Image (tube, rainbow, N blue to C red; front, top):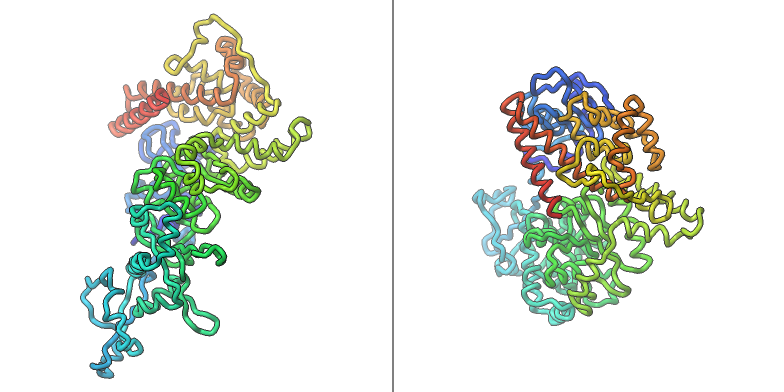
Length: 621
């Protein structure tokens, strides 16, 4: 049984992991997590944590981790399908039945019979012709004169099941074969600067202007063409082709299969200029990006979301293989996630006019919930009267690359967008900007540091943040780098920048409970969600929560001088990341020396290898 990823995600969304695991493990709420003794290994003190918001569990002892599916598979020793059936039943979601999806991909294919040899009545009543099970229609079947012979009788035809993917492939070949027959279509592609190799690679074609050209080319496949929306029926009951006298852009899915078509009118007076295949069993616009298959095939590294098909093709012809476009729809979360899965950094292009700004703001609101730590979004605002295609043709790829490199990050774009609407020279204007920013940052993931960093950056740019002037000191302990930072520096960072707690959260699995850093981390875990948004108030809040060890904290803050050494939130974030990685490496090496079991030793060594790679990458960058 093949279960679509969309169905799996829906089932997981409806499953409360805390309730599920709570039926097998006694859990207690501890700060932001639920903890208990791990069911996968013997232990006396709880090291098993369940994160309700992430729908994820992790044992800091044996390193077992996963989601609801993995938990049930491991604890009951059951296979994936058995577990999915149980979870689907509990979630009230029906799983696809065997072969049900394949059935949706078929249509009634009419098989003509020659009038010179009419079949017997008993044969006419037969529902199917007995073809071999491995029978497949040839890719060039539409050119077979047997199919286009007007003497053949389709009224008394028998039927066989055809496959929609095969039909789409044949239609794509048909459109390609029509391109050499239209000088107007060829002239259009030449005018847009496409060479013969590009036309061939993208399988570009032409749809004749006849109203019934597909019926003539595929008389046996009318049912399938109607299912795909390539043949429509008018109010008078007459069938007509959707795409006529248009250049054709075949649309391929992630496997390279043709699933639909885009058609562009050759006359700009014709509206709409672009027409796309409607959604069908094989074509879902909201889940596809034009050029994604081609970019993946070319091992693209940088991904660039543009508006139209020609922009994608022009960019890829110029060497930017990661260009993609939506299929006549506005970008959505699925589109952005498709790109974020391929790279943590993506760029989106917009026109510089008012409509472009409106589209940019809408995309911004869609993108913000997806911006977990490590993801980066850039906004490429195009020069007036230009799209990527025209910019490359008129200014050259070097100019395009230069402008792309200068494209602002989301934080800079957002600041420019909000401040141009208000007079930031007045307290009222600054207040309005911060109010609008708060509405947008509330869309960001609660986990991670980006919300805090973005807010602090705005405060500094508006003159609201307190800038700390570094004080010169000859104390050797202040000369810190990645290799020499210690627990005291981590404590100082956490007190002065309590919003950075998630960077250090993993350390709780390794630190002895009697250490000061462990106590600070436990306290911050309990108060993190209640921290005030204002930086200075958050510091006082954290200090108040850590009152029981105030003397030790005062000593550390004086010795490390963290408050004055760090000038910006970005600097604090980088220091915290490096310090946390260094300490995690230190504690992992200590724990490896005395593992509880062979399995734990293997898990710890795997973690150390991955951690070493992370540290190496940060040192290089």
